[in-house]
Image (cartoon, rainbow over all chains, first blue to last red; front, side, top):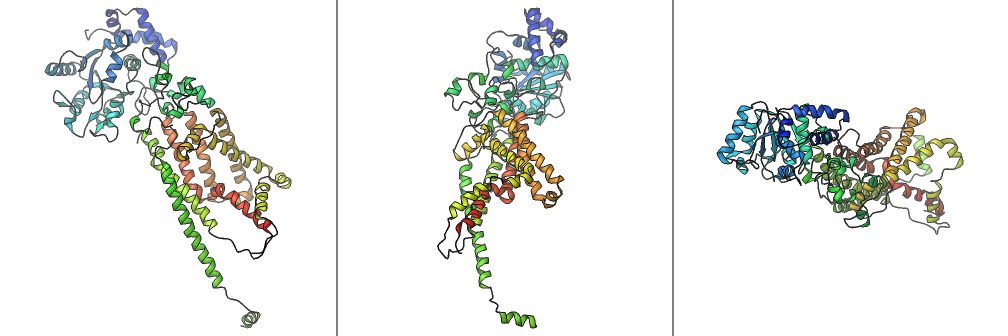
Length: 364
Length: 218
């Protein structure tokens, strides 16, 4: 794969037909909620786009994000689009290791300084540089050095975007997301644990064809994260009708009713799972009968039990309420006693007045 | 603070705090009233406190024709928003789950669309009453800060709840957190304002009836 080739040329070299390419463009166009008439523009722009040099850095992560993209059921067009970028450094996928691998990164940085795309998965530990290193370089140093010459950064996965599981309480490594260390570069967050493969490549396509995408308040491309799971969920009509599964094996669960009572995070989670789905469009967690965990949202691991409904308190308030009731009764009784005392004193200090006293008073 | 952290704060420590203030506060008020005590009965009563008490609890809940003729608007709007509040608070499934988690009791809910419509009707009824309060010179004169404050803290959960349900243009987590926070504001306001009538209403109506039904000497 030569860096000078366009995406179209690269795909053709891999044997992708025009029909296959247009089908992919149509899927991405609809996923980005663009009108069908934009298909031609997307295909033309993607066809002609120069393959950007990409450096992929993996820090505190589980490789799930890379797996999501590369372990599809069969060779998918997403995977080929991913091949269409010039992936110059990815220490899980590249054959080179050690000094040779680092040399590849430095070469890519040097040759494409200011123009390469930096993809990061995993969070960065800042409590101690030694918690995670690559070739003896701390994650933080490698990120700062590589980000300096990047045109833009794509934080793939919830760990890179928001800290993810490594940053979950008590966050022993002091894990932080990319956005906490890099503030002078455009950062596109593509969260998910892992993100949907077609969303990862969709963001890359969007970047190649239209430049930097519009982002929401969490730095996520609106095209893919603009709507909540709940709003696009096929079980939504059951929520509206008030039909819920009460357990994982009751009648409601068997009939495919809403999983809100079982802790579904759909109403507060923004992602494309309900529309793009997983495993080549087979299904998504709710379709398989499990509530959404909200994995594309910040701090999703620390939002209390996954199996308690979103509206319920996260703390056991029963005990606190009993103590409050006891305390309330005691204080109320004390205030009542004070009132009683006032009343008693008022009665005691009551002076009986005779007619003579009144006459005496009047005479004065 | 991220939206999730905000939501976690209001679902966690702030909700516990609001519950403690609500439960403790309401019991302070009730205990305070009950511990004021009753005068000794000096003679055998001819009537019954209970029958008088229950009679007034019922009779004061049904407006007589003359009152209805004079204040029909206030009575209808008042009933609409009180029944609406009951339906929205106690028959929306996500709310029932809160009670289930807090006190272990659960009951069937209504479809979300009905709750949605009830919210709008309740808000309209509350709004008309507020306008009436401001426009009518007598009501305006009788109204103080607390009357407007309790209106606001009652209306806010309805408004924020409506938006949390529809999530118009805002993050679902943020709007839900704002909704829960507005409920917490209502919870801590409850015991220390005229809103406490929700807990003392039947007690005081019973007492009024009991006094007249007693027919004895204290």
